Length: 78
Image 1 (cartoon, rainbow, N blue to C red):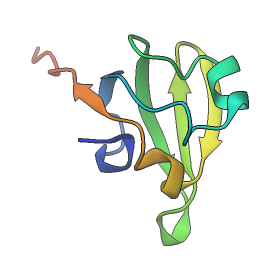
Image 2: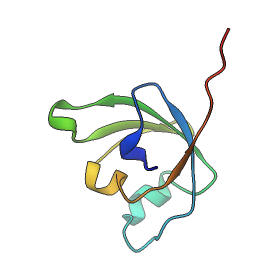
Image 3: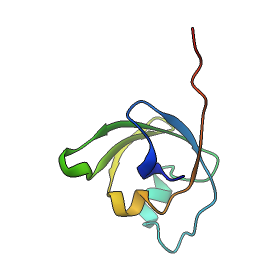
Image 4: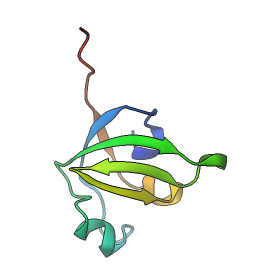
């Protein structure tokens, strides 16, 4: 499962990934293994994706999102 598979409002934890395929700027902004990611919005034509990663808001291309593996966090029912 990757960030590109998230649905709007879903949260996940970033797993390991190859830094060869991820821009350094994303790593500097907190896109690192173990950090929480939430999909906030998907642009028209499904690219880019607008994310919240540990309080940093950023948009990434779908192509990049397909390279970042995640573990989905279970939503808590009230």
